[in-house]
Length: 102
Image (cartoon, rainbow, N blue to C red; front, top):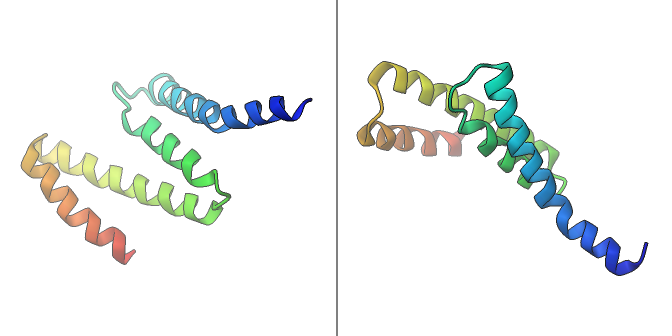
């Protein structure tokens, strides 16, 4: 392979991985887990790919764990109180300082 071709392949590696991960995570969440609108699945996939791009495996695990806990917390609050802007503000108000501590 020529150096130009190698550079082109490398340039498209991360965007291709990101697109595939987002699409696959959406499919798994809908087809396997039965979720009706799995918005968080592709978000987590995109963040995980972005975090691993630099070889930061520990950071990737931390981000995925934090997102999983945050999504579970938000799901609990939404199922209890419904969807609203004040609830979103409350979740952000609690989550951001908590993420700095943990």
